[in-house]
Image (cartoon, rainbow, N blue to C red; front, side):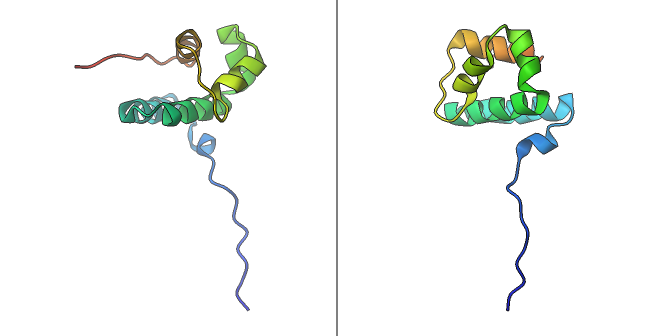
Length: 95
């Protein structure tokens, strides 16, 4: 009989433990340019940092953050900019 492995789902938040790692992770997501991948990356960083802290820094409610960053979320530009600023990263356009 085959031995059963006890596996847990992979969670990116476990590896987002430094500013450098967070910055690189977000840079790759934004470089790809896929809105869903960016939303997922922002969600992972927000969870790694703590939604309560993000709520305080953005002035947005927890429900607004979860709605914007959760599955099927589509944050407005204002929300996106507030989240990015609160996370301490900058967005830029390179030609």
